Length: 115
Image (tube, rainbow, N blue to C red; front, top):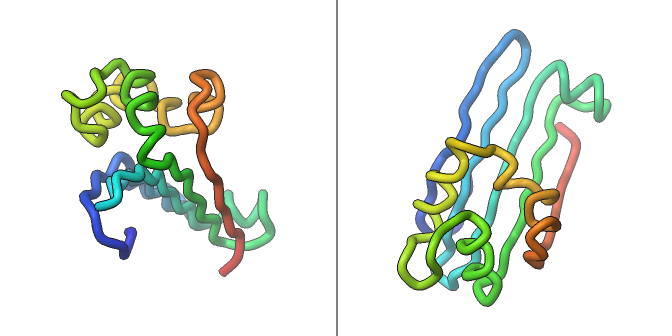
């Protein structure tokens, strides 16, 4: 779970045989939206060679209104976290790089594999 300040919603917390997947979205006090994921377990080890993979996508505050619009919301009226949560129920791709690329939303990406 993220340690920084801001409001957070959890979109996924799954456990299955040998695997654990978490996904959350944070609205930072500066207005940035950060989508964060962590995958642990056997499937990660098969793919990455270690049992942990974590990543985040950061959408900077000036680009958040475009993201809200892409989610089907109205910038300035709809809360970004509520818009993500609503859209995620219909289309889990809304928190992916592919979705952001399709909607021409600028973002930063970070990832790490390792225990």
